Image 1 (cartoon, rainbow, N blue to C red):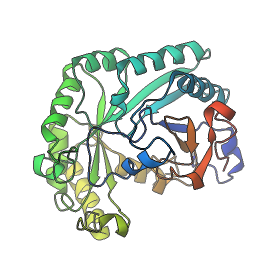
Image 2 (tube, rainbow, N blue to C red; image 1 turned 90 degrees about the vertical axis):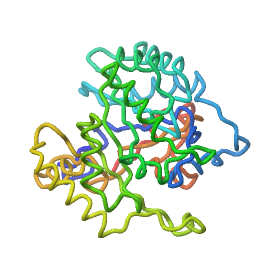
Image 3 (cartoon, helix red, strand yellow; image 1 turned 135 degrees about the vertical axis):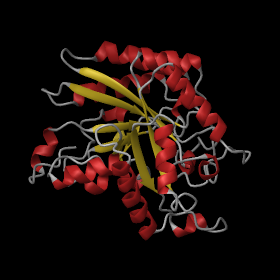
Image 4 (cartoon, rainbow, N blue to C red; image 1 turned 60 degrees about the vertical axis):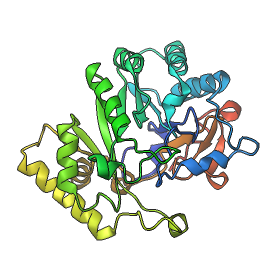
Length: 317
């Protein structure tokens, strides 16, 4: 998304980003705060039925996404998320890369990224991700007790050990990765400890996301959302720690980068630091495209990639 132009009209000619959900909202974990798991009930007749994006939908998405990029664009990214995208299986991603090679146009470099909880990663995954230069985002909320406060499986068992095992797979195979940390009531008071743990675990690019739940979702569960003042204090202390440890130029924090970009009137990396919204859509396993992965509902449905492609449904302002 380009936020440097005050006139929204040129945005129609700029690249857009797609978050692809190859296994929909299904996940092997059952994190208490996950906003996306309820989307399993979105499609009538598919409630409780795990399945991955079929081959025809995958090809329609791949072809249309590549064709929809404006001429002159030299690089694009396929971003795979969930739910848990690794549930789609290695063969799915092998096929995805095959289709990317088939439909790629001359001069266009294609990158892939994968956001995962890391619990299903093994050496086969590590070999594949390294060989194909995937950037992996690993969900990790801090040290054991902070991470396990809400990130549990369907039996209520903690996930920390499994996530760290996945992290070791990435390191062993030299896969480039960053960390995504949800800031919530359990870890909001521990910014220094969380930052130090992530860096010492090998992360050099950190993303922090505030947990903000609608009140109805917390009934009977207690309050999990980060307090507004606590989130501001958390980011301020992270900045302090980043400076104290002289990590400038060695460790990158998305929030710091985005604020610096906004100050310089450069493109922001987050919604709240961007001038315009609407250039990042989500595609479900069915091929249905939605305005954003936080707005996957029929009120924000833009169309189906198998019927109309991507270009006609991407917002233009």
